[in-house]
Image (tube, rainbow over all chains, first blue to last red; front, side, top):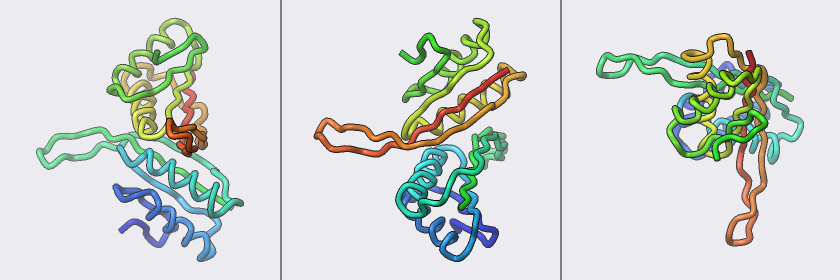
Length: 92
Length: 92
């Protein structure tokens, strides 16, 4: 799953363009706002996705808010690991 | 160079902790605000650096502003390439 019903697109390890398509689809389906969320190494891709959407596809979309944070993840070995996260809200 | 005189720390490909040290040093030298800047894949590291500084070292530091953008770079082959960028301002 790269997206769910509440206009959020979760960024994973696929090329940025797959997620760009997901975001553009949400806007074209009538959403005024799309949330882009990522953790760890995918944070760079999340920024690429937001920039590509607003520079090349939905020029009236603007960055409304950006938040960064830290999520604590349980590893398979039973340890805890901190992972940075980003939320980017695009709105038109 | 990972930092210059105007309290900016540029994030490259070294481990996050090298840049954390640079940011903490700036605060300890009396700066009230430190700018963290990164492009491309280093964007994830920039978020790690901001989070590690404020969670583990300078707890009174807060994220004051985050900007994302696109820089156009000239490649060695004479082409132009777009690269995403992030600026994170930490202040205490």
